[in-house]
Length: 447
Image 1: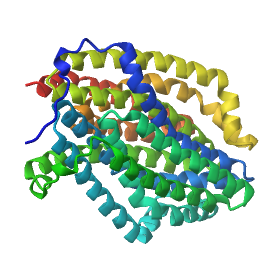
Image 2: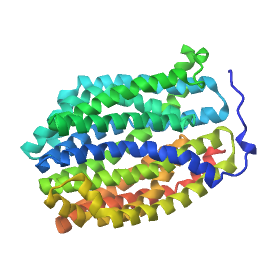
Image 3: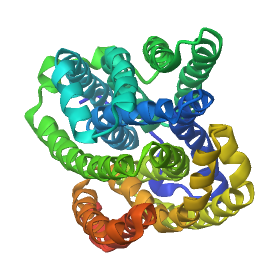
Image 4: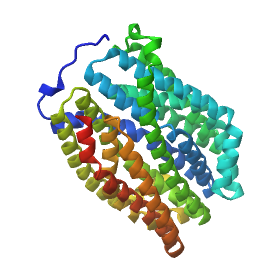
């Protein structure tokens, strides 16, 4: 098998904080672009005169979160496999770890489009929202569904770029898509007065544009060696089996995660349109916090993948030490910043007084969220780099059970406070349970 020369990481000095931040910061900015996109959608419709618009976008976006996050392994596993191939200097595997998941992405995207009617019907049936909110969610869905193949293909491209450490290119691709979406959002909704359909159309146009730019970046990449193409290697059964096992576990993890978010939104919708709108705003802030830590997790995934591909245990250990330190520091700074600027931040999302008042009442739970979730997210990145998703799967199953039990016990007593308390307990469970798997994961990675 043809390989290229690669600098052996076994002789590199221990990972420095500067090296980690140089890798992490572009990934943080890239990751933040995703929740900021949803935040802009929410903020734009929040300027419209009725909370049903916010609720409609929240429910419509949640449907697509289910569809796309179920296949979120296309990005996560692609990064891990690609990083390991990069560490081993294997150009043939670099190519295959792009093309295999890209084929899956296109097939699943087209399948979503063909099944759009039953997907929408069942989703809205489960949400149990008011007729006004449901109508807005339906119009949002009918437009956004056509972007499915492009979104999933973009997952793969981003995962591959991150895996080969082209984080600046991944950042450029995300920023391009989101700036285009923001501009179109403002124009379609505030200028043309297209409302919720304008938000959905802006998103689809930006998703299609991003995949065009992404493909151009791939064709221009020096890491792409088309001479390594081989049908026999593409269909290699051992490679497909390993990819299937990792993706299966990540798939189960995502189903559990989306069950949590779906349950959260469904319970919130039963508490009325104003509560649903307030929760939608706070959940957008939660996504921003989670994706911030996701930047550290993605950096850890790359470094862990390299360490395993090059058999460098020192890099493995150094990555864990550095990511823990920076995640703790980030938790303190993010919670403090949110506490000091909470009124101003909420006002960015909506001018509706009732929604602002409720969001301010429940924001205390978001101040606890960073401390509860940061370690769980970092360990998911570590597992992704090790291409061993079983600990992630098991952790998420147990954490989901804890969340559902908490919701059942606390919401009848504490209403929306009980719902948010259950979510924080779920986040804390992810951290505590996943921690127990770390020693075994390290041992299996270098055995």
